[in-house]
Length: 332
Image (cartoon, rainbow, N blue to C red; front, side, top):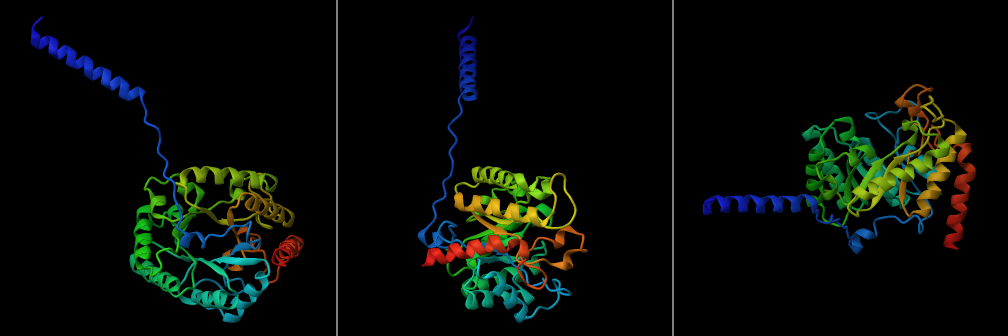
C-alpha cells in the first residue's frame, strides 16, 4: 500500500469520525430572554395591581351604524360611561376617520389606557395613512400600546414580512421609543410563524376563542391556559397580551360549545380568575354587541358585555359588581 493511499484512508476515517460526533452532539439550545426597560414596563398592566378589566371597544354598537358610517361623540361617551366603573383599558380596531373620535374622549375624559390598532389591508397607500395616524396618536399621548394590523396574517390580507416593515416604520417614527408595538393575530398564526416576527415586536398579542374550536364553556379556561403556555414558549421572554377572547351568549352551537347567557358568564369568570392568578392581561371581546355584523341569530352579534343601547347585560351584573367592589376596597 502506497503512502498516498494510506493518507487518503486516514483522511476519510477522520472525516467520518468528525461527522459522527457532529451528528451525535447537539449544542444546548439558547433561549433569548427579553428584558423590559423601566419606561416600557410601566406601560404593561399587572392584573394583581389593577383589578379592572380590559375590553375591545367599538362605537358601532347602535343599530344603523357600521364601519364606514358616522358616529357621534355622544355615543362614544355613552358606552365609555357604562364600562368605566369596571374597565380601565380599551383596545380599538382602527385609528382613522370616525374612529379618531374615541381617543381624546377615552384618554382625556375617562383616563383610559388604550391599545390602539391600525387596521391594515395590504394596500400600501391606505395602510401608510392609517399608520401615520397611529403614530400621531402615540406622539400626542393618546395611545399607550400600538398594534399594526389585526388577524390579517390569518386572513391572508398580508404577510408577516409586511407587518415587520410596518412595525419598523412606526417604531422609527415614535418620539418615545419606549411605547410598545406589535401586531395582533390568531394564536395559530403566531405559533406557525417562520418569519421571526416576534423578534421585531415588543410583545405578543394574540386572539383565541375556545368556542370556535368546539370547546365547552366548562373547559374553556383550561383550553385558554394551555394555549397561553404554548405561546409563552415561543415569545422569547416577551410579554403576552390576549387581544381577544370571550364566549358568545347567542348564536349557533359549535361542537360542544353552546352559546348562552350562562355559558358566556361562566367563561368570563373562569378566564378572568385565571388571568389574575397568572398575572396575565386579557382584553375581553367586547364592550357591546354590534348588530351590523350579521342577522340576530348569528354568533357574531352576541359577544358584548353591554347591549346595543350601551347598557350592561343583566347576566354580568353580579360579576362586574364584585369587580367594582374589590376595586373600591383596594383604593380605600
